[in-house]
Image (tube, rainbow, N blue to C red; front, side, top):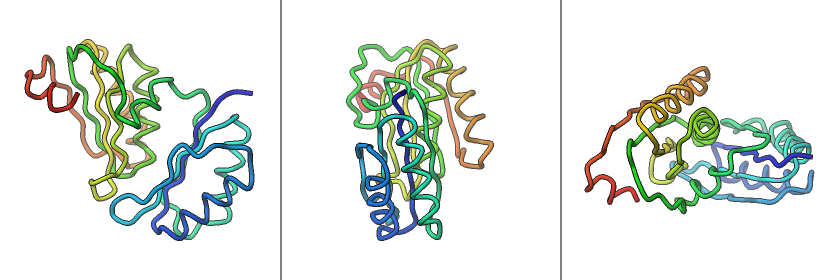
Length: 182
C-alpha cells in the first residue's frame, strides 16, 4: 500500500473536531496537524496508507457534510510537502522565488504537490490559513524556468475549482527579501 495524506477543512471548530474524531475512529491514520485557523475554521491533515486515508476522509465528508469547505486525498505526496508545512525546509540559494495564493487551506497543499512534481523546485513554506483570514500561500524556489512552470501548473490545477487568488515569480529576489522569507 502507498503512503498518502488527506485533509479536511470545515467552517466551524465543532464540526472539524467531530470530523477528525470520526476519521481516526474509521481508519488507521495519523494526525499530522489539526487546529483552528483564521477565521475560526478548522483543518486537519492526516497521513497513512492510501486506502486508510481515503476511507477516513470519505467518512468525515459523508457524516459531517453541513460545514465542509473542502477536502482532498493525495497518494504518494511529494516528500517536500511535510517540511514545507512546518516551514522547516533548509534552503541555501534562492535563484527565483515563486508565490501562489489560494482562497482556502486545502487547495494549497494540492497546488504544492503539483508544483513539486512538475519541475525541479524546492518548497520553502506552505502557510495554511494561519493569520490570513482563511487564505493560504506557498513559497518555492529553483531556476526561473522551473519556478515558472511549477507555478503555472499549480495555478491551473487549483484554478479549476475557483480557489486560485494570485501568483508571481521573482527572478533573483533581493537579499532583504530572501532574508525575510528564509
